[in-house]
Amino acid sequence: MCVLLVALAPWLQAEERPPPREPVASSDIVDEAASDAVVQRDLDLESDEELLPEWGRGPFELRDPYLLALPRLSPWMRSPEVLAPGEVEVRLSGVWANSFVLESSYEVDGEARVFLGSVRLGIAPRVEVGLGLPWEWRGGGVMDSHIESFHDRFGFGQQGRGERPRDRYRVAGRARDGAAFEHDGEGDGFGDLVPEVRFELLRGGGWVPALTATLRLRIPTAASALATSRRPDASLALDASKRLGPVILYATAAYTYAGETRLDGLELERHRVLVGGGIEVELAGWASLIGQLQVESPRERLLRSDLEPVAYVVFGVKVSPVERLTLEVGAIENVLFHDASADFGVLATVAYRF
Image 1: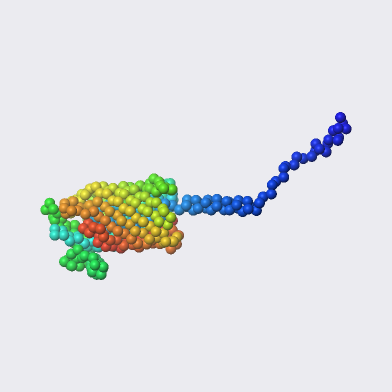
Image 2: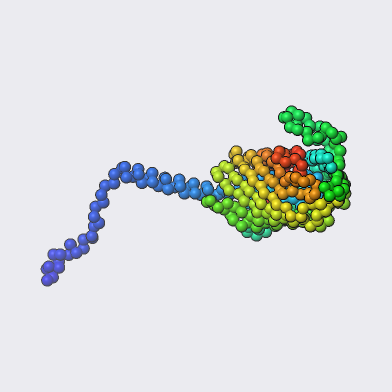
């Protein structure tokens, strides 16, 4: 027995060897490398898409600059973007607009220059608060002759501009029920405080747009010369956006409740609705072209039998020359309706984030 174990010892101590591997063809190596490259490319694309939010630089934030709109709260379009917790944005925006409406029973003629300073702060995930304070100037202005020349050059009607003195302020007339009104809002000074709070409802992704709700108030603090409403107003807005590559679509719907419905003898609507749509085309990482249309339900009551909605076309450019800084320049026109909105205006904004 011992002799047999000694004879088998070399075989018992031999390690079990794995079966030989089959040779790998060079074509299989190439296919495997190509497959890995495709997978990595898809992962990179998915990562890039995740880094791009559903919004861009956003639409122009246009507050209605019509002379009869300034005494009360007017909502505006916004991007659904909400500042991150601790992030601060400081903005200074301005609009210079001319209003002119001439009817047989009333007229609105004058200019407004409104500068709005605002501070916005992210206070929690998906929650932002802000506070704005405007400085307003209202008067006869200097734009009448330039607007007349512009209308003549492009064949637009003057809507009766040649029948009235240039560069004067007058908002007065008689409503259909016979009541006379005159809004003596000529002057300058700080306007009403406008606080707001925003809640991001949807971040968006895939086919789902980003969606944010905004509650905005107007607190009567304006100088007496501006003759604003002495009761607060409130507005609730929904702002949405969807990215399609370098193109971003925007939409806004807002409801506004006015605390006061009478202004210097003129009856105004208490409940109003605004809808707006816009498009942004990103030209590069530092510039965007913006175009938008916003329409709001009629403002005045008993002024005309065929009251028109308020509609503005806004277009312009936004640029970011350095990180966190945005510069905006645009123009506004009431090309759809003419009897309840500013005739022409320009706007500009400087915004910086900390």
